[in-house]
Length: 177
Image (cartoon, rainbow, N blue to C red; front, side, top):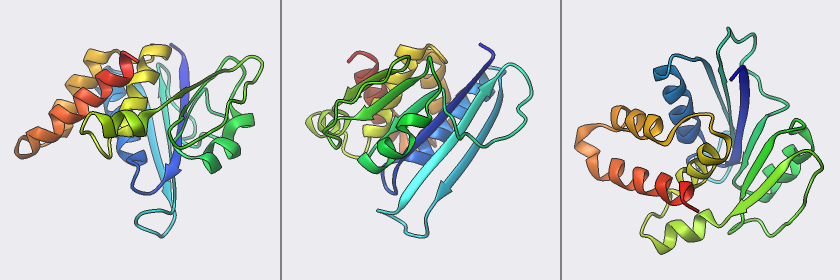
């Protein structure tokens, strides 16, 4: 695997930090070296938010991801800001429900998934982040679907079991898209 640098970006309220935390926790449970670095503006919802996650089989020198191998963009400003920063051979996935853009880049796989619409259609409002995460784990094979599902079972408290089921359903929707 070597090292995979992931940047998840969007605005507050889209679950950016939770998605990053889920990836980092899953990597940790899989025995990887991990870093998770959240960054967000002062606004609770609607402000900018991004999360750097690094998964590696060797020690990580810096938690900062300025040139991601994988970019998850949940809004247009994030896609525009990091589109050209994604490494050659990298992967960009964005929420095509919120971003009406079909740009391509040589040497980078760029895919849109209508995550917000899919979440709404399936009674999973607020879980577009997990739908996109499902797509990313399938396409990149950084982690397995079972690894992520098992990690979520440990992250979500038992008293919120309904949220675990919804998150798993969202991940599976993205995985099978």
